[in-house]
Image (cartoon, rainbow, N blue to C red; front, side, top):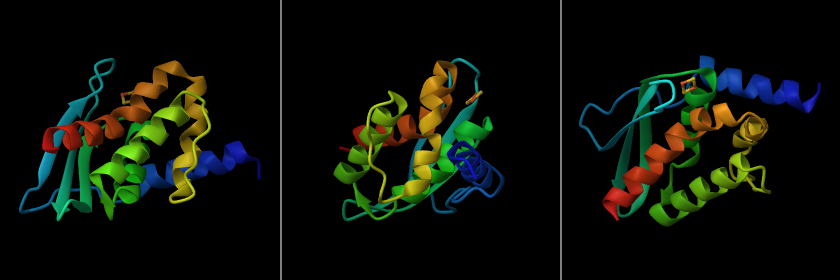
Length: 140
Ligand code: FES
């Protein structure tokens, strides 16, 4: 199987079987964001205890790239401090610029590396990550 096919499968798996989709019944740090170019939106919730992201959920409507990226991000961010979460988000920004970025800690994210060749889709892929950054900025 070619790498592109593998990456496509990983993306579609997260799109069709999203991890962490839903809302916490008792709330949490909530960030709502939309993609101004298409109007698609995400609502991200984080459960933070002692400065560590214990859990994450998201809802929203969007294309396969935006929703799979949200699924991956919410998996990858669990158990991280704000600083570590920001480092993860910064690495994702590098990936979107076509710069080297290491995701040994959650390799599924590398499936989105091809997005950098399609500038219009970068906003899709970064929607959830921008929500994460916004949430961290508001809290710190
Ligand atoms: Fe709207 Fe991708 S087309 S987020």
